[in-house]
Length: 114
Length: 112
Image (cartoon, rainbow over all chains, first blue to last red; front, side):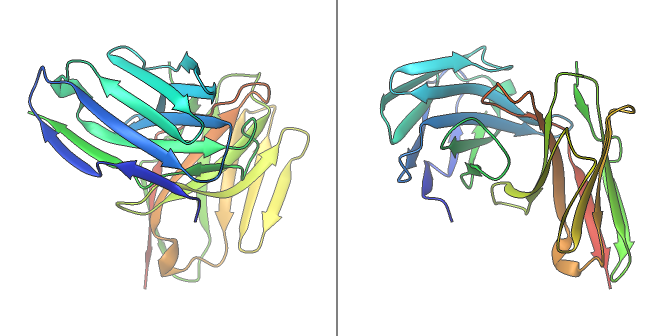
């Protein structure tokens, strides 16, 4: 198994509160990604990083920000959580550009916004 | 705009028979296609992939077929086993991008 740890694994929070999800990798991979999974939508890319302090938006980036101050850590922040951000969040890593079996996913973080 | 579509949300197959999961795409720039398998409460895991320069790729019980003219790919699992019961996601990449576009998934149930 790829060395990816997501924390917290489960969280319930109130609308309007800030939330930070953490992804930690031990593989020293360059690329890191945050996806969310929702019924009827599959997995959608929120943000990704191609190096320390280098990040870019995905297809559903509104309401989210990210930071990567170290190779091994990629943080996803919901500045003011809304009920529409209730979802399962997956971190993923890849050594280089995605090409088949080089992308690895974490086990997911379940977030409920009430 | 869903660029990768899996029109069958679920599929039930008997153990030992063939499972065929389908995926359609609209973006002609996609040149690499992948299938991921996901069990409940776990992250997706890579299963098999195919480049657009090929029309078939086989790995054990799993075969992926690509029909570029129809913008269609399929995953065949033969023979199906109960442990194959999972959600299967089709994904596509433009090759130069470092991110994947996923379909909505098909839940496969293999019955005894």
